[in-house]
Image (cartoon, rainbow, N blue to C red; front, side, top):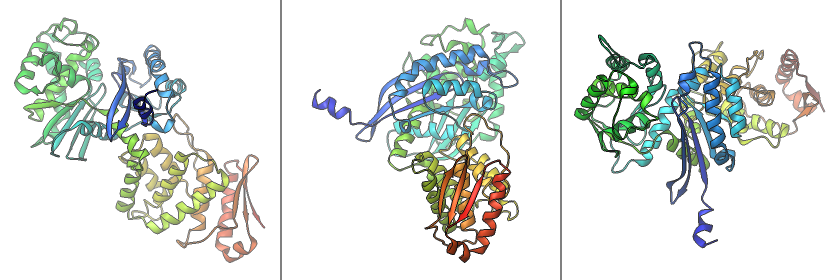
Length: 496
């Protein structure tokens, strides 16, 4: 092995897999001198959105087509540590997530990695991060637009995003809605014009997104249009050129009749729909020119993973912002977090980093609803966490956080488990005990207390003199035993 090759092996590698509504994209990359180097890419035109029916069930043949693509991607992913891999599902899997447990579990089994269903806003953030990674020149105001299979993301910002939007329109979704018959020009009813007008209607409240900004487009539809207009090159899309192309496609009788230079045959079935959306965006946002970014969500995911490895986890920043906006007492959050983690260390010394982070963040946010309501702060706080746009978090991470916050005290609510949401009792018990210990917002050591697994249940050993000093805590622990009995879990509190 040469010295250069030996040096190459020291670079940390990361894999990002985007399970989009139109296509699946895999990226394997590493960083050299803080510069991302793309080592391997792969793509499969799955058109997942085509398999979603009106009740959000995924058609078996489309599901199998998707799984076959994942079997091809799996070897690349399985060579890496799990912390260096992120698999995200976007619009179609967001819509189907409550009905797609079987598909998601089969996909996870193939990949050997969990699939994170992310919100449209998180998708937009990752796209912007990817585009900015390839941006050159001095920082300037940008509007980034990414037309996917099921949704379109628009982001306005400079070095960081300032306004993020996700709109429910994409090339596969619009293809089903307007071109399902395969016809474009149907006489009095031009489906291309209908699709373009529908796109404009979706954007009426976003007309100022591109004002005074350098407009940049990313991903498949934008790149396909750019290549068609620019002799196969990824050069800027000009308004006049786009208008002429739109007229040409609108005058085609059918989707199959579209015959354009440098159009990928795999892209042809959804090209008219994607072009109609892009045409509507140019008109509604009054765009004259769109530059093309070589990077998109995959590169954003890789940069996010590298940031986490370097200690720059965007999720921690999000929690800190929520704590500030929610007027959370940072000292109480610190007390509960430290004690909860100490209990978890006793209960499971080998707990995963992801578990410890989740518990810490739940403790940080356990009083987030208190500034709005004292009596209903747990329920309100859980709702806020589950439905907030939390940068860096997947939907399942938010759901698990919300579950912990909702059940930090009192009766433990029954849950309906599904893919990505299988909360166990360990983290909840540690959080609840920490909340009991610091119910009065006072620093209090738990040295001498010991929490352990006891058969199918748990045992908490408490020194007699410690319990004597804190009689209110003794009463709360007795109630805690009853709460767990209602869940058919035995918690024994024993004085020593």
